[in-house]
Structures are given as C-alpha cells and as structure tokens.
Amino acid sequence: MADKRVIKGIAHYVYDDIDEFQETHPNTVVHPDWRIANEGDWVYSDDDRIVQLLKVSNNVKHHSDRKNYKFAKGWVRTVVGSFLNRPNVKMDTDFDNHPNRYTFSRNIKNTANRVYKREHVTNKEKEFATNIVVGLGAIDAYKKAYTEMSDQKARKKATILLKQERVMKEIEKSVLDVAKEMGVDHKYVLNKLKNLADYSEDDNIVLQSTKELGKIVGTSGNTVKQKEMGLLGVFQGFSPEQLEGASRNELTEVGNGEQHNEESSR
Image (cartoon, rainbow, N blue to C red; front, side, top):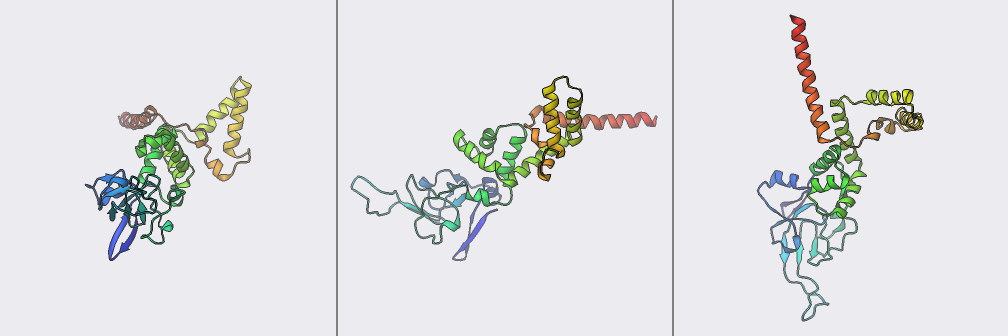
C-alpha cells in the first residue's frame, strides 16, 4: 500500500511496485536511475519502490572538492528525504530514517526493512508465489516476477521473500488450490504412502514412507501447523503440463458426467 505525506497542502506518494503505481499513473514512465533523472520524474528507489523527485540540483559544495574532483554531482530531494548524488549513496523510502527531509541522508543499512514490515502481499509477490508453484526455482521465480537480471541479487531477495509469512501463505494457497483441482489431497497422499509402506518389497521405501506418514499425522512430534503443511512438505512445484492437465481433467469429468446423465435419462 502506498505511503502518503502532505507537504504544503499537496499529497505526495511512495508506491510499493509498478502495478500499484500504474493504477493512478497509467501513462507515466518510471526512470530506472534516479541519479540521472530530472526534477519531477518518477524513479525507482534503491529499496525497489517508486517515488517522485521533487527537487534536483546539479551543484553542491563540499570541503573535499578540488579543481579536478567533485565530491558529489549534486543532490535530489523526495517526499522522504534528501540524497547526495554519489555512486555509494543509496536512496531509500523509509520515513523513519529521515526525521528531517531537508538534510542529507545517511546510507541505508537494510534495504529489505520494508519487506519485513509489510503486512499484505504485493502484486509482484503474488507473481513470485505463482512462479514458485509452477515449478520455477526461487532465483528464476524472482527474476521473472521482478525483471531482475542478477542471479546474486535475485537469490538474496528471493531468500528474504521466502522467509515472510504472507508470501508463504500465498504459496500454500496456490499449491492447495491446484492440488485440489488435480485430485491431490491429504487422503490421496496418505493412501499412496500407506500402500508403499504396506506393500513395497524395499525396506528403505517402507521406512521412508512410514516416516513421511508419521510427519503428516503427527506421530513424529509435529506441531499443528506442520500437520497442516503435510501435503506441502513433499511439494516440488507443478509443471505447466500438470497445470494444463488439471484443467483438462476437470473438463473431461464434467463432460463424462453430462454424458452419463443423458444415458440415464434414456
């Protein structure tokens, strides 16, 4: 949800992602690099939000300036704070870091702070969760959702997302919805594991199947939450073919049901 601050009677906003931004600015381009953007431009901050440059100056004096050296190329100001235009300065959107928006910001230490505090999933987080469900690895799921090019950055950000309860709940919901369409539920999993435990001739398979059954039903000391997650414990992501098959099977079942009813009425 966008943050808002009113300055001299005018509301200024900070948006969480591009989808939220385009709801009110459908035809506005967001500049990817705030350091070379112009006054009035909407830009991406270094903590991956969208904010407007309210003031841009290409001149700033510093005691380190020399004839052939400038400490900074200038400065910018947003609704959040003021930032020197230097390569090592990060522009964040955490109001708590800037009690006075007219003084230059320190470097932010934790750009993921807003991710930890956020209560509701964003559209990008929903897309990330969907990518996980269809079988993409965490890195590729993040890169596709956030159009990130760096594997290293995607790995770091994906790890953070997967530690957030709201994101995991979104993944759980998507998994269980698709599993239900495919006819995979707790009863299905239990029956499969029970058959392996009862009839397999391989002692290792019997042992592992029994262990998995114990985890699901709670005899292995699982918490209630872990019991609820029993189905998800062995989940590795649905492939596109499985997802397509789920929809196709559902249509086939409906068709067969209609045919059966027609035959019964004859």
